[in-house]
Image (cartoon, rainbow, N blue to C red):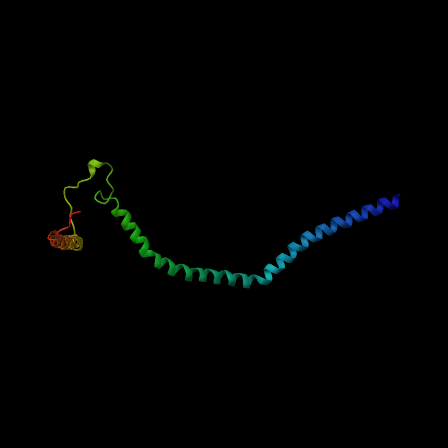
Length: 135
């Protein structure tokens, strides 16, 4: 029986020592690998930093005009002339100001409509002289 207890205690100590060795051995191996690869790790960090800088600078410079345009649009949206009317009383329909292109386009459309109308009326005048036989 004593032999069995001694064997049990030896096995228990062996398992504990193996467990501790595994845990500390992995830490020791990790520390050795960190020391060995330290120059490579530092170089990779520097390369990653430079690469990130190379990538972000062109993107930032390309987005700068867009950002400024959005900021200007936000500033312009604050003016009352650009904001939408809140009630029907705020809408002033008595005066419409058109630019040159906008002013020419409606008059062109009116001319086209009048031309079509005149063509229709002249065709109608031609049809009015035709007599329809009665039944």
